[in-house]
Amino acid sequence: MAKIVKSDINLSSVAFPVMQELCEKLSETVILTIVSDLNAICLEVITPDQPIKVSSTQGKILPLYAGASSRILLSHLDNKIIYELEKRNMLEKYSEFTITNVEELLTLKQEVIEKGYAVSDSEVDVGVKAYGLWMSAT
Image (cartoon, rainbow, N blue to C red; front, side, top):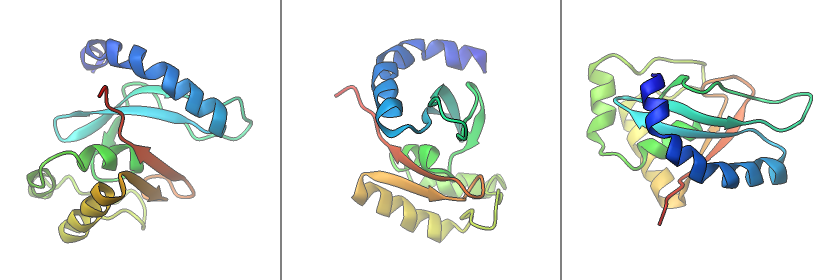
């Protein structure tokens, strides 16, 4: 895991100023995730100076199908990934709001593509609403 995180240090250094600006403007936690095999991995986390905040930890493995920061990544991958997650019994429920039905995930993936961002509401952590945006060097 540390090897993956270290290999993407350059990505972190490029993304960090943008993440910092977002965190300051929104007073919300900003998380940078990357794809690793059939998961997402938290590469970088910036948390606001607030008494109550949502956070993650660097290197944390996240489901690729649940949560906004992961789903935005999934939207840029082939649909066969969703079928592979099902085949490997990796579509587990983290809460009653986690979507684990393949057809619903495919529909949601298409919606994310059309909107250009992902939204998650209590899918991984109950009470947490999140937005996922794609960052690109181009």
